[in-house]
Amino acid sequence: MSKLSAVNYASKLQPAKQVLIVFHGLGDTGNGWSFLAEYLQRDPAFSHTKFVFPNAPVMPITANGGMSMPGWFDILEWNLSSSNVDSTGFLKSLKLVESFVKQEVDAGMDPSQIIVGGFSQGAALSLASSVTLPYKIGGFVSLSGFCIIPSILLNMKNDKNLSTPIFHGHGDMDPIVPFPVGKMSSEFFTEKCGMQNYSFNTYRGLEHSTSLEEINELVTFIKKTWNI
Image (cartoon, rainbow, N blue to C red; front, side, top):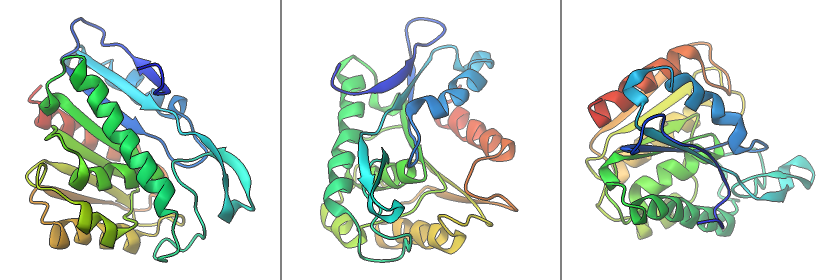
């Protein structure tokens, strides 16, 4: 367990009955999303929820002139529609997603009470894991996410989470992961992968970040998923 680097928030009440795992974006750390745990823990509905915010390894990012920063995979160019991607790094981090889920399952958590989410790079991992995870979990969350290596994912995919609910939120003014990229990604997962319970949510005027409106709709999604 100690090999998996993360910021952990224990549930306010024991035992933990649900786990929310959120993978951060490029240049961030797990601490960058700790606000979400603090926000949700104000709500008694989340009293038995454990929060896990994994930390990405530090690596040189090609599109940033080789500058080193936390990242789940290298960004070779900012054109996210390009096929020139770090598939090796992405697949390595995709296995990490599985490891974090396995850690919770091995500790006794019911997989249906686990939600995997992420922002930007982390959301790309969350979306990909929806078709590759060997566990049927409670739900997936993508905030400003996108799909890379679609052809590889099609070859890897299983049907474990075809009916699992997915929340995908995207700002229509996002300059980093442009809105059309997010929309095309959602269409890949619904039309090519056959995901049956995929919700794509548009946020007017939102750039590459989250907003209170998006977070509150996410909270509604999580409560419905866990029936809390």
